[in-house]
Length: 314
Image 1: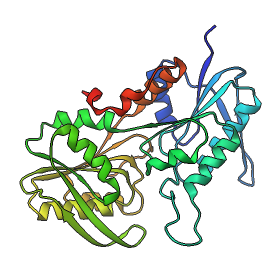
Image 2 (image 1 turned 45 degrees about the horizontal axis):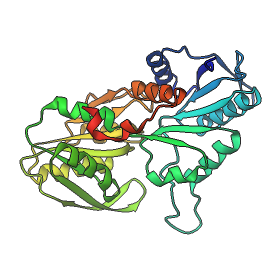
Image 3 (image 1 turned 30 degrees about the vertical axis):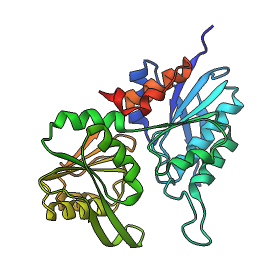
């Protein structure tokens, strides 16, 4: 007998969860959230989940209550005797805290991994972690998906005559190099120095972008300060156009103002973080079909390695 499959969503990313459920062909289950006067809340599954393959869809975006809601749902599912519990986390919050970059700081990404495992999750499905090594923070399987399967077809649809791939910082060099190899084009890198978080003190361009159509790649766009400065640097160096592709649109602070006032012609993001976007330059591509496909492959024990091979995205 095939196992019963149930999909549930937290409150933070319910629109994406609904699209994933539709793409998978399974309805979202009913979860109730009870709020108390002091701000405490309780999660409850309003249907049986005993013996099920249970998928919980929730990005751990701010505020931190979204993470705690996911943890409560995992605990509730475990106590309700779900067979396997999968945490589908399109955007893994706190991923930028992946190491000690100065004394006496926490490694937030590792702490979140510990909390998820302690709550009782059996597998994590996520996309474009800030650092690949975060997978090693878990002692359970992690399906780490790449947004390249979403972005590559879009890049090809633009039919840009003289494309070049660029990274807004040295940390994204590996990602940019993968795209450049597949697209058979050159690569540029922006070397930046920060005086403090979200504030750049100096930036230098490495590579020739003159007469090129630039695709800036990053995993997260937060205040968009780095992207705006990178785009300005590219245009000053003779680039024809600059487009930015970032998996997770955090877009906080003066992000929309920075985007609108920048040389970026288009900012392409996915829907891992739900937002009402305040800039006409922002284009959102759906990740629902990708997550739905990986959910199904987990159920049928099929390989998901094709999602890591750029040659399969055409």
